[in-house]
Length: 359
Image 1: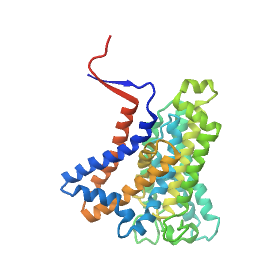
Image 2 (image 1 turned 90 degrees about the vertical axis):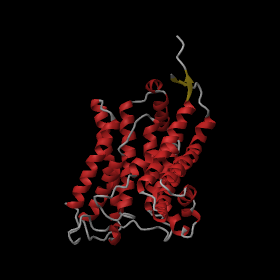
Image 3 (image 1 turned 135 degrees about the vertical axis):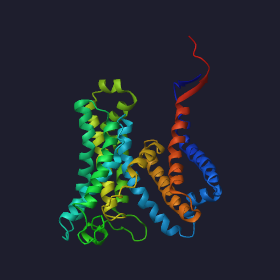
Image 4 (image 1 turned 30 degrees about the vertical axis):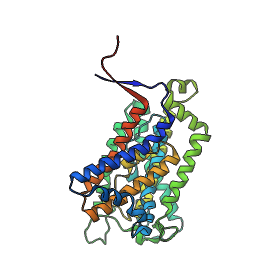
């Protein structure tokens, strides 16, 4: 019989080392997977992790690294706050979609208006859209005691169907020759989220991600609310004696994570993506969960983990083109990262014992 015995004081050294071990284990297991598919494993790993940074076209791909990392960091920063409090928002993908719909919907509603206030208004609309979508599981949990994991996850499918309805219906481009999808916001100057520094890939969404990292750090380390969040996650009973109101904490955490996910969706639809389509969502909301845990729910760790995960996105696309790797294999490779991270975390917090427990 295999038993798990909780360690009294888990090692802080191993707690911060396990993300590195998870990355190394992912490379090894991924190499074996690629070898089974008949592809050169060393070359595949090199293509994923080396070529985007130091390859022939590295100048372009380094800019794309920021484009991919921006929404991941922004969403993961909000998720980490709730996770630290033991509030599990698994529906950031839906909040990301709703932020994009609300932001793009505002721009398309006033098309072709030209105003310097339009883009800031879209930012507010995107944040409100994600916030309100996050409030649904929050209020249901507060009022009726529902499980926020199930409710937030199910709302992702609702948001995806709403996205398809918008792409084929109200937001469909009247000049789009019958094809589904909205007008391209990249061709709408007042609503376009253009690069702040040409050629770098850094747009307003990347700047917002950096601001979010700093703000979340200050909140968690220097604010009384951050103290309450940490206590609620580490010692729920002690949190009640410290004056923490669980209902208020649920609303704050789910609302904040929803707003940041909505911002990520708005910046994406007004920039790199450009339009509302039925395939707009790229799984950023789910991948951000991996980023949050890989970054140890710490803002600086999330920043580094977001860049690493963005690297696997770009390197994975290059591996598909250069080595003809199937996209499913790249997705499995990315999923291995969370699998190994959780496995090493288990060994960090628990001892494995063989044999029957003593009476």
